[in-house]
Image (cartoon, rainbow, N blue to C red):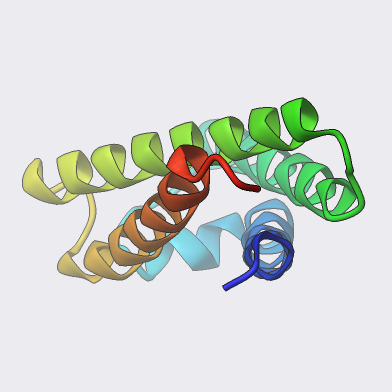
Length: 124
């Protein structure tokens, strides 16, 4: 898979999650047995904003030529996906979220592996 395609796929996933977390955080988190009230809805919406910012970075990076800039975007995505995978597993193991959390974990892990491949592939 080409890096540009990976960035476009991640852009689409981030946009989908970001818009959902901003406009329907209560419904999305309810799927994972997490009840949000007014004070916890706000951080979920901020997470949505972070996803949209990540989508913007990824979409912009599809046109980058400079290798060091592309490498920085790859490192950013690799780290954020690794952290997302670890936090999702921690949430499942603490019973903070339902077993349905294995789906986002698998998405985070797959993206982390894909970005890790490009991170350690020096012929970008």
